[in-house]
Every structure is written in C-alpha cells, then in structure tokens.
Image 1: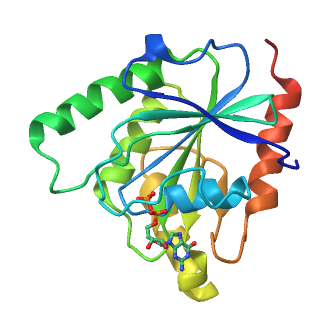
Image 2: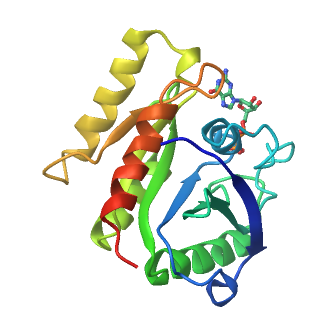
Image 3: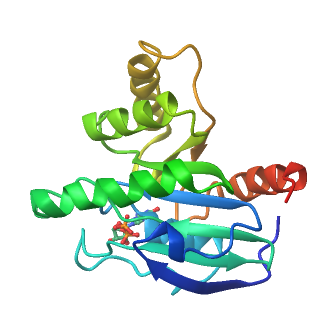
Length: 200
Ligand code: GDP
C-alpha cells in the first residue's frame, strides 16, 4: 500500500468523541519510548505527524489520523512509564480499555516491542489481556537497526517461549526500523489486505 495522504483528525480521551466508526481502524501502542511516534512517522512518510516524545508518558490521548481518506491510524498513549502517578495510570487503563473493548471498527492492535530488551512483564500482560478479550493484535519489534540479526532472532525467540506457555500460536510479527524503514512495506501491505476484506 502507498500512503498518499495522512491527516491529523482529533485527540481525546473519550471513545464517544472519536470519529464516526465508518472505516477500518488500526491502533499502535507500546511502552513509552518504544519508538511509536517514530514508527508512525516512518510508516506515513511524514516526519512530523506523530510527536516524538521529549517527555515520555506525557501524550495521554487517543490520537486519530486519517490515511488515504480510507482508514484510521490511531496513536494510543504509551504505557508503563514509572514517573506517571498511580492515579493517572489507573485513568489511562480505564479509557484505553474502554477504547479497545468498544471501538467497533478496530481491526488490529499493533503492540510495539523494543527489539533490544528481554520480554517485559507489562508487554506480556498486555498481550495476554488482548488475547483473552479476543482483540486481534500483532507484535511489532522496533529499533531493529540497533541489533544484530542474531540478537533480533534471540529477542523474538524469548517472546515466543514466553507466549507459547499460554497460547497455542503466535500473532503476526513485524520487524521494523524507523531509521532504515525496514518493515514499512510489509506492515502497510498487511493493513491493505485487511482493508480489502473489511466491510463498512
Ligand atoms: P515513543 O515514546 O514510543 O513515541 O518513542 P519515540 O518515537 O519518541 O522514540 C524514542 C527514541 O527512540 C527517540 O530518541 C527516537 O529517535 C529513537 N528511535 C525510535 N525508533 C527508532 C529506530 O527505529 N531506530 C533508532 N536507532 N532509534 C529509534
């Protein structure tokens, strides 16, 4: 899929204020600093679309972008930043959970994982939660340029070992780098294929 246009639509914390669910929607989520904004900018060939985080944990909003006048890309707040107070973490969980559970046009959640780190409890728990709620998701390993191919393989294997303790099969996995654009085509084509079959 080629990206011809990418426009910011609205930011909010309330599912009722999200755009009309009249087209396929894809959400991107991960721990603060995982490289989410960089990935969104890389995917859309727009250096400024998503704000790269100077202050992790500060972008606590559901951000909608309209792509090719055809689908929505949603930038969700980063989770698990230690300096965010417990009360705001609880608030985070509530509105994100509501969004993920209730958004009827949500086709897939892309869960971003930093390629350099061993499996993180918070990421595993979040994916477990998505699985039990029946919300389709994929794993997106970020910052692949910072790892050797051997490290990348090991990182994926570790996740696989952990996840197959509870699940029978793995979700789709994408390997990406915002600096080299690795994974751009595969990820966009994946979205394109789902869009073709989506009925609205
Ligand atoms: P966010 O908090 O998840 O939105 O993360 P950002 O996109 O702001 O990225 C966090 C930091 O990681 C920034 O310093 C980025 O320049 C860096 N970064 C993000 N993606 C990549 C990548 O693919 N490769 C490299 N080398 N650095 C990256």
